[in-house]
Length: 553
Image (cartoon, rainbow, N blue to C red; front, side, top):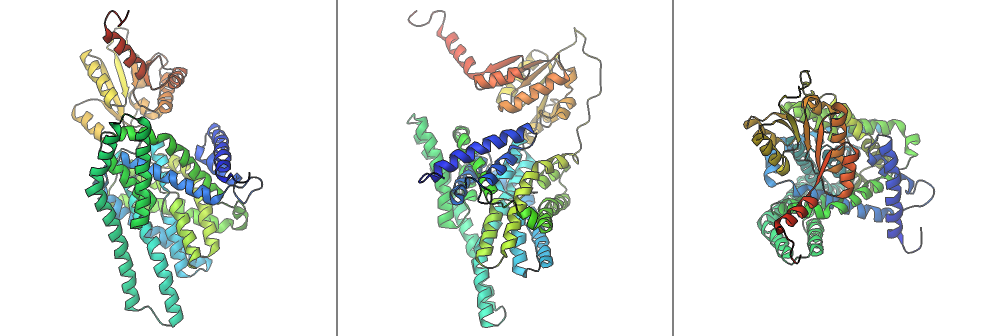
């Protein structure tokens, strides 16, 4: 490492290798997360060559977690959180209990003390914030009912782990006192444990109350004042300062995790009409630091663990991928949740991450957890993150597919036109009104449940699902459509939809939206006939509004 530049070296080499291995993973049809993890292993202390600063990598990764949870909070209202509490709270607690019991059982087989098995099970019970949210975002289900359940489940797990981190030192002190006195567990010691639990819950409650009473007024007020200054740079700085400041304050003053503090900051800011702009301003940083999270995880992994302890590692991985998934399926069945929600939760939780490392490290430092157990937790985390995309593939096979549209003859030249609208937000709904005026039949492909309910109430043909799936397009009768309007804002997803639409119906006319020249070129290369750029249309409208003669002409 160059002398005196550990941060620059880590950022340059870490992000560079993450890009290279991410590209390779993508070309091999794997998740780019696999490439990011391999990049971390390459610059970690267990492989030859450049060794990154693990402490710096961990702190940079924590910024990624903060920004990611802040972004989720921007699109996740308090009503959303409360709407899934009946499932998320008991579900998450039951799943934590099931995973902890499996960890205790494995600890017993390994010859560890009871407390070691409990800490080991707790470390295996909590899913990674970053991995879960990345998986939900890739499938565009964060705003759906099942996505809200998954995020709510995650929040409950985070609160439970905060409580565990506070209780572990108290537990270790009590154990040492009991060992020193040679006696048993006394009522005074039980009272200390109860007091610690109440104190932690009180801190979390106080933080939430302050955010709801004061943050709900202060944060939007600050943003509006900054907007009136007319500086985009200051607005971006204000958003980042609020996200990081609230996360740090929550941790230092209330003992709440960075992730949980950032989530509530985003949720409060989401009440402002400036939330969409705030999300856009932080998106590039969120993505970059999220990549650093996976690189930092890879740096912790010793590849020799695969050779030294293959069977215990497979046991830990089995608890994470199989045990937790089956527990989630059973819990969701008890609550009579539909198959798509059940399998999404099951696959989302089949991995572990940042809280697992913190719990395992604290357990070893306090003498509650053997060091070999920490290595198993790290190994299980790496392998479960790599295998998580496969878990979604397996889960999808258990979700009933929409029935295919009945085959019919191709439309005659004089037949009434049929269109498909992908996404029924502000753009898609306006297209729908214009099609109705022109007496053109259309179907909508949508996955946001609140929009789907409204469409069904209006009697509009609606296909639930992601149009980037060939099954969904077939359910929308893509082969019988004359037009398809792709209104989703994600250019990569829109390109995939255009590609599939062209494959299934070579004669269909494809119209899509773009936000840049590069995105327009990408869509055209994937088969779009017409690409509408918002900037171009606005410029043309302003020119048209000038009148027949431009000023000064």
